[in-house]
Amino acid sequence: MEIIVPKLRLVEVKIDKDKGRVIILEEGKVVLDVPWNMALSIGRSLIKQAKIVEEHENANQIIKDQALLQRVGFPIGLTNNPAIQKESMKEAVNSRELRRALPGGIKSQSAVGTPTVIKKPPKEEN
Amino acid sequence: MANALYGKGREAFLKADIDLEVANIIFAFVDAGVYTLQIDVHDFRDDIPSEIAASGNLSSKTYTLGVFDAADETVSAVSGNEFEYIILIENTGTPASSHLIACIDSATGLPCTPNDGDIIVQWDSGVNKIFKL
Image (cartoon, rainbow over all chains, first blue to last red; front, side, top):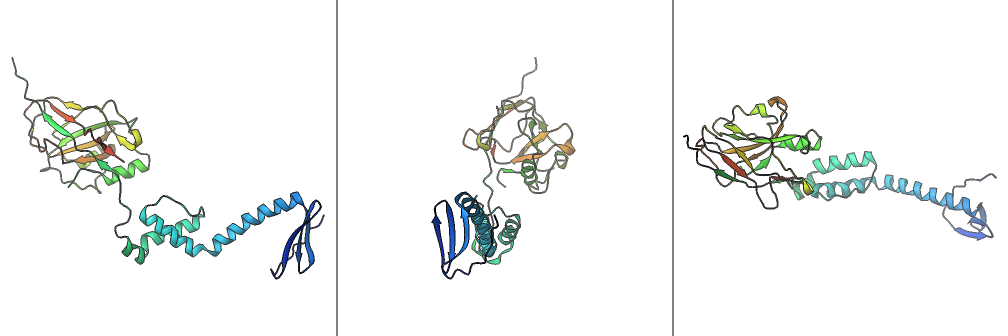
């Protein structure tokens, strides 16, 4: 079966069902007519690709948000895109606004205890 | 300066160059008159010009939730100048490859002038024990 891939203009798009098939109508015309299992597969792929495109579109905001989290030491990653992670790290380190707002960067939580030194008297020689 | 971990020692932990469970961990008594501490510069034992005395390997080591602890340790018949630092070291047997871990200059009983008797180091029984990462 041949699937025609139309460029939808989102003017009037309707998704409907017809027996065992899923159809997409644009302005009343059928532009996609596929079995339900293929529709599920296409749907999953659409979501996956849409999320990647969304990340690209919002990259600047993600970089700023991730940089803020890194600056305050909050252990959450907003993206697993290495390029965006790299940029957010640069932003966290170099951004004048962040450095002014959160001076000193991330403080280490390490600590060294306070021991007691006990000096015993020298042993007497016989 | 307060008790602190060496910066290069922390770096070594992150790079898995120090494995506390496997390594021999000792401490040395060091005179501040001969050793000028540089906490983020010094990395190995050969940065310390001389030591008053050094302990044996720490025993009964524990690492629970990133907190390092061990049994109290006695250094026998210590003599020499007054010392101000207790320096924790990963002892490889070679000073040039023995990582410096922590420098303690705040402890009950410091500075301490040896009198040829034994010196016991009793680790902190609070939450930080010897140190916490």
